[in-house]
Each structure stands twice: as C-alpha cells, then as structure tokens.
Length: 155
Ligand SMILES: O=C1C[C@@](O)(C(=O)O)C[C@@H](O)[C@@H]1O
Image 1 (spheres, rainbow, N blue to C red):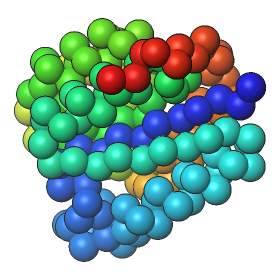
Image 2: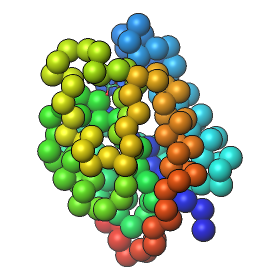
Image 3: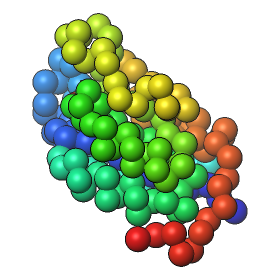
C-alpha cells in the first residue's frame, strides 16, 4: 500500500510569498502544497495539506490523522516556540513527524532557537527555504515505514 503524507502549516504560513519575503521568499503556500503533492505522487504516495492560524484546529487535524497517515511534515510557525498542546497531539497519535522551518531559526532571535518539537522529531529541516518542503516529502516517501491503517481511528 502507498504511504500517505500529511503536511501541516501553522500560523501566518498562509501568507508565504508576501510575508517578509527577504526571510521567507516569494513562493506561495498554494505553490508549495502543489509541488509537494506532485512530489508525493511521483513516489506513489497520497498527500494532504492543512494550514491553520489556530492552535486548537491544528490539534484537531493531528488527532484526525491517527491511524490514517504514515508521516507528518509540520511547520508549526510561531507555535514552534510555545505549543505544548501541538507537541502532545503529535506524541499522542504516535505518527512520526518532520519539523520544518523555511528560515534558519538558529540565526534569528534567541527566542526562536527553542522548539517544543525538535527532541521528538524524526528529522528537522531548517533554513532551506521552501525547497525544504520537497526534501521532507521525498524523505518521508522514501524512508518512513508504512504504519498499519486503522479505519476506526479517524475522529
Ligand atoms: O512563523 C514562523 C515561520 C518559521 O517556522 C519558519 O518557517 O521559518 C519560523 C518561526 O520562528 C516563525 O514564527
């Protein structure tokens, strides 16, 4: 069976392409998602993308992915530095995840250096710009194990 991949983007990443382009570049989130979908398809994987500016909505989407996906790629945006709830959701569903940041958070303000996700992530991609998303999809597609899908697991 094909692997399935879920991409989650947190707050303000809907503004990719127009938001601080000197930091985040000129590519829109729609373009990122469609590029990821094409990359996933080339590897025979199914792909879904979700973006929200709301912490609880991200927690709900992660919970709904329980038993449904083999890997999650998440850019938690500013929630990287604050959210125990999103961290707990990822750990609660037992799906491996890649943490991704478009910018090199370690070269920015000191408070961006701490992440609630890095110690639990299967891998971390930082500072590759939006190219990092494609790398993440290729990595999950090639290297993550297929988990058993549980039809009853979705909320
Ligand atoms: O919103 C974001 C985007 C970000 O996660 C990145 O992709 O570089 C880095 C975060 O510090 C910031 O709050």
